[in-house]
Length: 79
Image 1 (cartoon, helix red, strand yellow):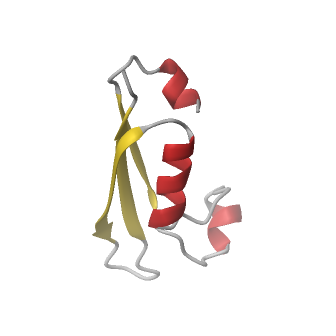
Image 2: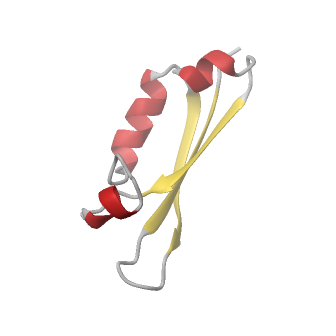
């Protein structure tokens, strides 16, 4: 919602986060509040904030265990 508020009409949102995982150790060691997102959950949150033209894709998989997957989402603030 804050990103939508500060973007100009037609502005683009870009989100880079991890795909949902169960590695609890990242909460303490890396100070993560959320253990990633599923595609459906991230898309729902972006649309609920008022964005359109939402696109999501898995971008990269870490070759080292625990093989975190990067999730990239983009969207547009309506005019």
